[in-house]
Amino acid sequence: MDVLLDNLELFREGFVGTLSLTATSALLALVLGLIIAGFRVSPVPPLRLFGTVWVTLLRNTPLTLLFLVAFFVVPQILFPGINSFLLAVVALGMYTSAYIAEALRSGINTVPMGQAEAARSIGMTFTQILRMIVLPQATRAALPPLSSFLIALTKNSAIAGAFNNVDLFNIQKTLSNEGYNILVIFLWITLGYLAITFTISGLFRLLERRMEVAR
Amino acid sequence: MSEVSVTKDAGGPGPATDKLVVLDNVNKHFGALHVLQDIELTVARGEVVVVIGPSGSGKSTLCRTINRLETVDSGRVTIDDKPLPEEGKELAKLRADVGMVFQSFNLFAHKTVLENVTLGQVKVRKTDKQAAETKARALLDRVGVGNQADKYPAQLSGGQQQRVAIARALAMDPKVMLFDEPTSALDPEMINEVLEVMQQLARDGMTMVVVTHEMGFARSAANRVVFMADGRIVEEATPDQFFSNPRSDRAKDFLSKILHH
Image (cartoon, rainbow over all chains, first blue to last red):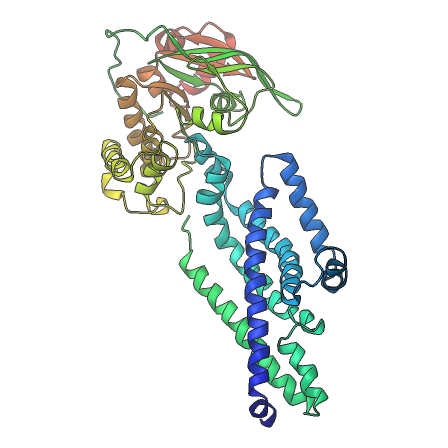
């Protein structure tokens, strides 16, 4: 108990660090994932190719390698002096966007072809159909994998902690250096992660219930 | 075979001479299957053309090429003298003028009946929302499902869903309506309620291309029957001529199989 009460300020800092990194990169991943999913089902071949390359590249690269590139290569040659939080957001967001795009695409595939055909035949454009007809129905089917990927993102954010971004994982190093019992430190840190991941799954359960589509 | 009695507007002014839909030497393949072979078809304004034929004869495909849901390999499709453009904004604009009713209804599952009928008006025609709703309610009344406006498609019977689908197409003020086997997925007792709406449309002078197995409808509502087999138009005639005195052996054979009871 002492370790928590003695270092409440540090724990708070770590928790807020993990929370803001997760939230910001989740937002980036969702926006990018949505765009890439749109590209992957687009009638325009170059866009489809771009989507495929994006997903293949990011999904098949180890996240740690992405972080190495983000933290050691990008500042060296592209943006010297860029803030480490931003680098972590970009690395995590891009990595997760590949998974989110595929989850959305699997959702899109569950929507019967006839829905898009009916929309085409009343004169709607591709983007209108995707936005108003297909995605609202696809999202419902994509919610379970989406929640899994966002939970994975929460836990993956710990890698940023290893790269000196202040978060729950990162403060563990600081505290164990100060000589506290490592088991007790981990217990409190785990509770911090659980608070975030349980919130995500709760949120998605709620969404699933609200977005039910009767067929 | 369900029979809907109707008096076709026989004494009235015949179909106008101008050509609304023209298919000129259209060919299409699905892999090795030559599904449309040298199709020549002209539909005049106000004309009701019923396309019949055995399964796999290409009649649905023919219907779907008219609003380019199926692309053609060669030949030309024109609507109101405009050739169908490539996929894009121009084609979308043209499609808005061509109403389509599907075998499986295809109502937007996540939208209410009313929203199904207003969506195209608001998003494609840019009609004001209030006006779109007024028009949608009038159309839903016209097809007899006005009291279902706030339900979702899954809560309606097949016949009701198909009538909503007709209202959705009509809401765009189409120049021509395409019906792709509109009653084939319906329970027998619901077929007539859909056919009656279509009969009324035909009487009101709507240009229609109807792919169907309902010979009663073909007899009573069509100006012309087009008989297809194996990807070709084998015979074109008035319903009276076609049903009482088919010229081709293929049509005779087809009719003998379906009309003997």
